[in-house]
Amino acid sequence: MVILLLDPKIVLCKFLGEIFFLSVMYLSKTCDHTLSQICDVRITWIRSNFSIAISSLLLFLLFLTHAN
Image 1 (cartoon, one colour):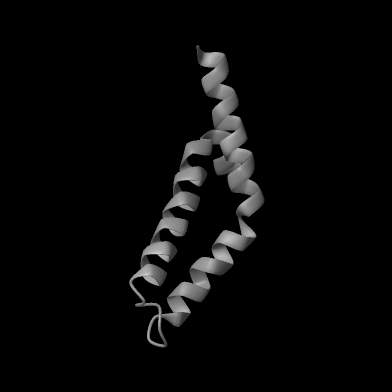
Image 2: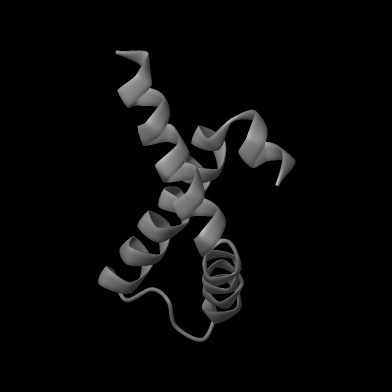
């Protein structure tokens, strides 16, 4: 939560990076039994931090609109 208050771009970039990693893994069909634990950890991270990432996105958009 402190990271969210300091720089919401960090949390947002991490969240989008995890989603990108998972989509590449599933599209290339490499998320099989050998990498299933890695995928499970990343899915768990996305699920647990979804609300923080959405809040970060909203704060970042709010910052952009008021910066102009």
